[in-house]
Length: 101
Length: 187
Image 1 (cartoon, each protein chain N blue to C red):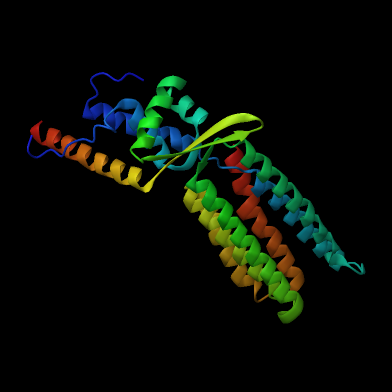
Image 2: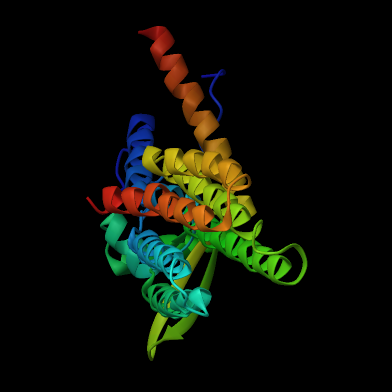
């Protein structure tokens, strides 16, 4: 296992990884959009987004649109770096696996 | 989405799935290409036709562009309001066409006050080519890329021909760079 870089436990969760992967390609996205694309429940998604926000991987802006609350999420620089590191670590796992096949 | 045993293969699949979702959101919006394509085509051909008659103000047809500007502002404002996700591609495309529009206005002002109309339209065609080519490269849509390249060739020719012929070349430009790709995107 010495060759493997550790996978960031915060990102090594299906929903949190899905949120970050979705946001990496866009400038910002509404909560409802992320919910629809990940297929998660509002409650679970809200919890995971908060965890990512606490780690400063996401920026969350709450506002009102046509009198309804609106939550917009965007990835931070720290989030981008964490995702890049995660993908690189993941790549090393996959490379190692293909060598062993 | 379940949380249990999440392997590195699952991670990879999740990332791929999310990339696929994001790609679907790239809206190759044909509306603006068709709107401006038809308006410029009509105006340039009408200007050419009126030049052949003794009509005093043949350039008056360009007033049609105000309709285009109004419709563009209204549509982009309403679309922006409804948008649930904003991609970097969206932002780039908007800024690109703002830059092209500013370039067009500066070319027209310079032509009106300094150099004369003879050089205005070749520069417009050149700017259309830049906008179309870059839109095509970011959307990875070949008809727009070819439309942009053809526009540049037409722009080069336009510098050497008379003003009425430039109007016909402008009509040809919007046909190949706006209308044909616009209808192909719509399909």
